[in-house]
Image (tube, rainbow, N blue to C red):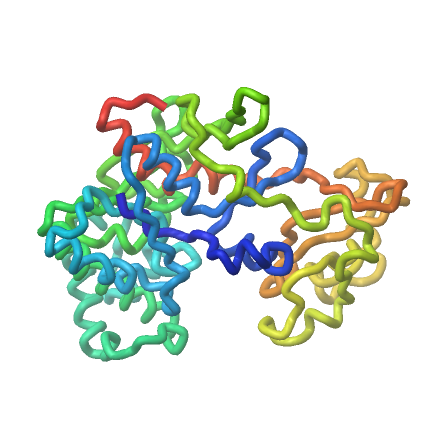
Length: 389
């Protein structure tokens, strides 16, 4: 099974603390694996691969970040000659991503394709028409000759990546390779454009009762359904009681090794041991803002509520302390993402000994990400083989 996904590079691992914030947004997930109250950051591709491994597949990881354009077609073209020559035997290609970093609504797709009234119900029968409209725009705009998608608008990026993936998928399918694509986690009103590729297995996610999750894509392009969670990873230990990994699929085997799991770099540190930035640091362009470090709670509130009066910000601070149960006398620091400083990643409270402690906060998006269609896709292969997770 070729898993085309986000993996950490050796350089990422070496500089994990410096790049923690950016990596948290580049195809990684957080969950508390060992119930110590701290979120464990795990690369998205490693978890997806764990389901493939549990299905009995040998995994060939393809790191989408190795392509400067983040284009799946470019990555798959690297293995296509080996598949066509018979030098590389591939049964399945699993793709758990879409062409853009945000969901695509059917209304937006109608405008892109120039086809009125596309809906979740009719997108299946309109697939060929939409894809042909994409191909026509692809030719008209000369998108094949544009290597760097950063020079294009999001709509043009989506058209380029979808058309080129359809081309390479057709070649792989001609060699008997099944292409499995996650349907997306943004609900019935949105779709993953890669599901437009003909002949693909598009997988939606079912809950424990066998019903589609409310956040799963649910449209007429989705042609298979598989369990999307929740999964409860358990530690696997050796004879000496040392944790050797984590069992994600409940088969008693370690699906995730401990070397792909990372803790927040600020937990247990003192504020003077980590960068703490003022609000002014985030008035610069995103590329010039701090990559790592914390801001005070007051700074975070000012960044997330621009233009609010001092009284309103004070009220927000009181509300935070009341709802979190953290005493108002305890300084609070926030780990934020430099491109979107109003979006908190993690909260830390300073303890009486002066050290920072991670504050668990409810975040349904993180749970949904873990119990998402990304994992239903490789899960389906084990299900077909009669395996039970």
